[in-house]
Image (cartoon, rainbow, N blue to C red; front, side):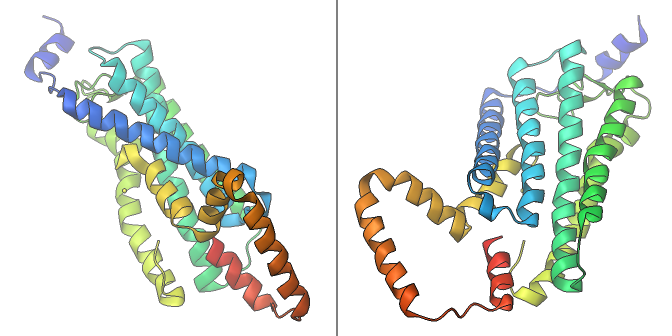
Length: 273
C-alpha cells in the first residue's frame, strides 16, 4: 500500500456539515462586500485619503483576495490535492498572512504617529509594503515549491486547502503560513491599541470575516464616511432640502470668522480616520 494511502487511511477526512459550509460562504460574501465598500469609498472621495486609510486600502485588498479564495475552496469541496486546490491554498495563505501584516502595520503607524509623535514619510510606507506583501509572498512561493500546500481533509480547515497534512514538517509550515503571524498579531495589537487608547481615549475578528469587520469599524462606524454614504443614497429624494441646508450653512460660515487652527485640523483628520 502506498505511503500516502496509509496516511490518509489513518486520518479520515473530517465531515463538514452543510450548515457549516453555508455559514462560511455567507461570511466570505459579507467580507468581500465589506472590503469592496472600503475600496469604493477610498476611490470615491479623494479628500478622505489619509495615510491610515491608505494602509486600510491595502488591508482591504488582501481581505478581498482572502474571502474569494476561501469561498472558492468551500464551494469546490476538494477531496484530493489538485492544481486548483494548490492554487486556492496558495492564494488564501498569501492573502491571509498579508492581512495580518497590514493589520499590524496600521496599528504600528498609529502608535508611531500618535503616541511617539514621530514624523513618517514614504520610507515607512515602503517598509510596510515589503513586509506585508513581500514576506507572505516569499513564504507562499517556498511552500508551493516544496509541495507543502495541498489537501488537508478539512482536519485543520473548514473545506478549503491549506498545508498538506502528509508533510512531515506540517506543524512548522502551519506556523509559517499563518498561525505564527496570527499569534503575533493577537499579542502585539492589544498592546499597541492600549497605548494608543491612553492618548486619545479611543480603541482599535476570524479568517473569513476580516473585510466585514473592517467595513463595520471604518465605514459604518466612521461618521464622515457614513454621512456621505447616506447623503449619496438619499440624494434623489432630498436633493432640494440638502441644497437649502448647504446654502444656509454657507451663510453662517460667511458671517463667522475662520477659527480652525492647525491643531484642530490635525484632530479632525484623526477623528475622520
